[in-house]
Length: 336
Image (tube, rainbow, N blue to C red; front, top):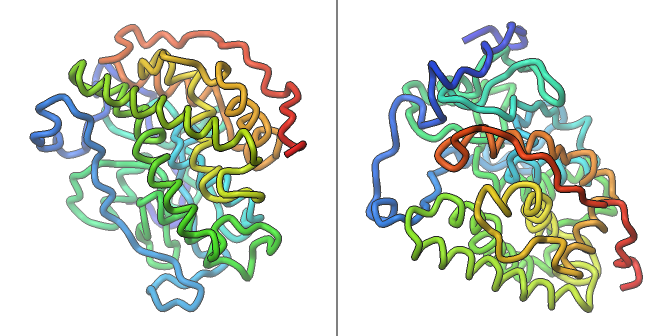
């Protein structure tokens, strides 16, 4: 491990020939009964520290103490970047991005368009952050990672907790006009987020990585049934939980943004395109018009990650061109 703050030359070039495709560093995951039957099962996210404004959790909210490691290609990570920007926390919480193309060594720090070397620890690979936190760690290496500069360790890689803590525990530094998780709406937001996660956010992975026709069919049925319901819900209101943007809207948007560019072909979610949904496509364009969404969206990273990293779905690793989408066309959502 390099000294804190030291910048190295980063990882060597992506090399699938030598290192193969991504698998758990230190060994493959144990097969579960669900995976044996063809059902996609998401890996565990074991680091679950929480930030608290008063410090009672052991991780007090503080400007300059925490750093987010993300990938612009990962929807779980992108939503952290969106929330950070919506709240105006860029000066309080630093952020850096890894290379979107990932070989068998996992997420890596290289210099490129939209990503770069690790500015905090000089790591070459994100797995070094996991190893520094738990020596001998052999589990899944994921983004986002919330890193504690003071402790020299991971606070959390559990993406649902990170955005909630940003929205609720950094009030001293955030924009008071932005309330993404207001207490009166939390039961409604939580209920929406549970459905969106199970059937939409994770649904595209359940579809793409299904190992049987049965599990694929169930995943796309759940996905498009939920999108149909959300289309109806948003027909009469601008945001999912009511009159204001909340955590639920952010969580839905990061998946909608990648439907036509990635999931439609990569994950076989080919029943309908996002652009076939009049309301959801308008909702997506409404949010994309805002800097927090537009400036954290990198379609090139999204496409190169999905089509180059998963050779069992795309053996040629050829990245498709298009689609040609007019994200700047009038959305009409401001009338609601």
